[in-house]
Figure (cartoon, rainbow, N blue to C red):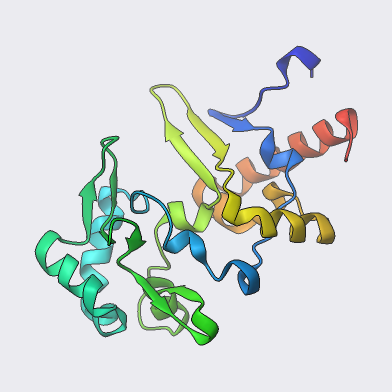
Length: 201
């Protein structure tokens, strides 16, 4: 691995940001309270297949949604096309995901994931949510896998460093679900080789 090529790791047909190897990360929900569900200027990216799944399970989670979210869905549906042309979940007040609900202490919860963990539905949540803070960008010949650095995740970076958890390790389950075990194992090998050569600081 040459030093002048320290921009991305190529794993099969995916170009992976070195942030996945270098960045420490572990969600600290007790501090951030799930703020990523309610901050931003657009909803969570979803696929057409995910949109169809959400519409199918909507009756099961309907009563878990906030009244404002129910009104938005009645008027505009579960998704819309954002300014960048991406299909995303609908939002309330220009930022809050319609599937946000609240638990003890004001912690944000995903109504979809809540229903999944309670065994009421078989769809956990959109892949983009499960992969966050990693974002995927599809190109003609490859997929870019990048870290979305955001100030609200600073506490996750601190906790990850404290516990020695790198971003690629934290996202083992969703990355494996998305790209497969073989791909993830290749990523681990590449990240470990990079860290061994260029330092573990």
